Length: 303
Image 1 (cartoon, one colour):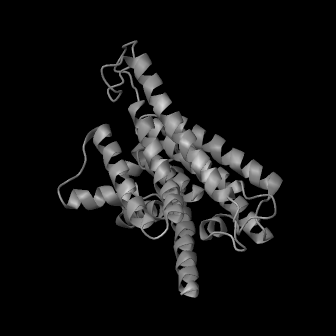
Image 2 (cartoon, rainbow, N blue to C red):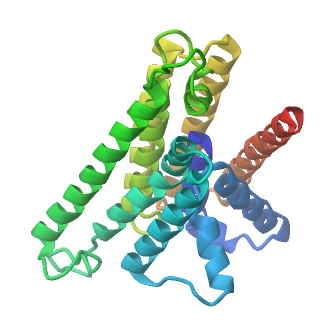
């Protein structure tokens, strides 16, 4: 979900500020712990939970290559397990849940920084023995190759026609909510998830918060414009819900940008900063909680 992905990035960025670090109120910390948990749970990506599980077992992966290999192993294992029942449904679940995280791992290799007044970039995660330029080209080529193949498979899955009277279950799952001629919008959702995850990985909030929030604004704003123009869902209330969530995500990005920008001002008002941080955390918690309740109700109704 785009809102959950954006809210996770926003919460992480805000919690890096000096004001947030000084807020020792237990209730505030508890609120943000809940917000982070709910945004991770609602994002629909499975890599975080697998990392936590392995860390409890003392098998946590270290370094970017280790994390990347872990994500690939977990995704491949689960897809193969699901494919024993239905290979096409397994591929749909695998692409939807794991592709954004796997492609975001490619972006982590390209994270570079400078130390002091040094002119050259330090890119410690790029694959050896390549230099910075060829390393970046190799990472970009790997990202584009995996993305192109995955996107082709996703389009084939979401638009495949049935030879029999009834559509395959994976096609029904992907396209039943869209209006006539709008089934390609499921591809837009996947692309949006990939871009949001990639932007968050390429511009970490601890190092490049402004670039990260700017990227999130562009991606979310573009999605809101597309949904406003085409309104792809069959039911109008779903279109308004999607637009409302995207608008709320843009509001969160604007609030986080204001908090980070005000941190650099000598005349900032501490109370105003704290109120914005608390309000932002409350919005994330409320919306993500509503998500979880809605999902639980729908699962109960389908039983």
